[in-house]
Image 1 (cartoon, rainbow, N blue to C red):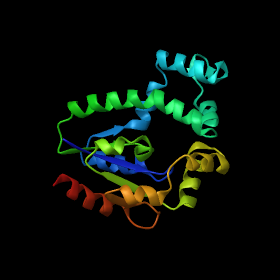
Image 2: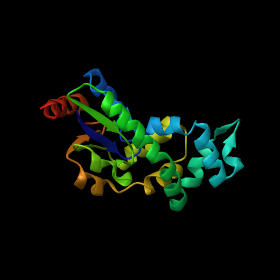
Image 3: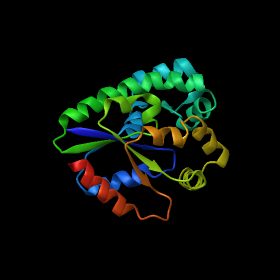
Image 4: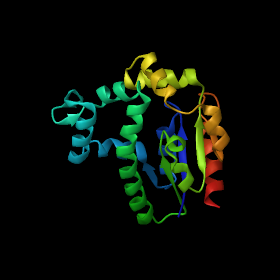
Length: 191
């Protein structure tokens, strides 16, 4: 089975677009959701507590908001966190990939290029949206400050850099209709 990455900056609409692909019976591996689940594993909690301190734990679980506040303001700590999570996600992705029986599937991940996992895929779909729209979506969705969204954006590669590496693009700017773009792309990926 071919697997294409699907990525875009925070608030670009990756999950929304993946849900449309799901209605077309395309299997989706949600790397970011899998990463969140990995954060619940006892061995991972122990590693993160050792690295980031006891204040990162609340009721026996990782306080993701506190963790985000730490790592999105310190690139070294973000790299350390990713070195714990990414190998586990990669292992689960391979298991998922081998279990699928479809023409193609999608691997959704926010930092597909930054993590280097795009190199192991058959191509990449980039979801593009203007930064001001992305920021407002995340502020509305997560009830966070504009600055906290800007901090997260600063840890991702610039859109131009990702677009240059992507094979396909979907524009999610609240103007151009998404469904025709997705159907056209689905037809192309099914070939």
